[in-house]
Image: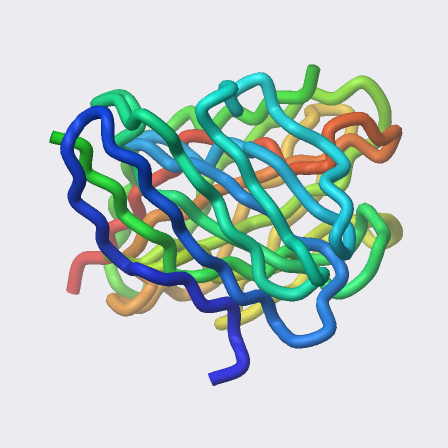
Length: 115
Length: 115
């Protein structure tokens, strides 16, 4: 399968714990995006990378969230001191080039439940 | 700021009948418009996009969408619905003038095709 992959698919954690998610984009895709989707809503943009550079962060991305793409390939999203409001589906997407017309291809998501 | 409205939470169509899923948008400049479909417990799958040119865009699985600049709409259509088309559909927009590079999504429309 050469699509976007995410790991884990499901994560249950207790409030206050740290969690880390991984995204592997489609090979050679330059851009990588993170979105959050809550029940009954569409995905909301969090941040994106062009190669290893993080170019934009949404105001939804609080200080407890950090994302990295160290070698311009896979990316990690870490949430520190999780809160119940962080419970959501975290989606990763990648696109091939650097243009705004490029299609974003999404992974299956990581569903986070904070107890 | 850019926004997308999907006015119908749910659309019910009999199998074999034409279907329309509505989307209107608001951007400062000219838009790039996208439709995605989401099946249960899966990520978003790209259906089609409007960048420029012909207002009628054809996409995957027999879907098409019509861009109407005066009405700021981008409705998704299919001439003959299949039961397998039942899913959650999202419209998304990106402003050509840049700024936030993530997509802005609507809340989604549940499409139910009845046999």
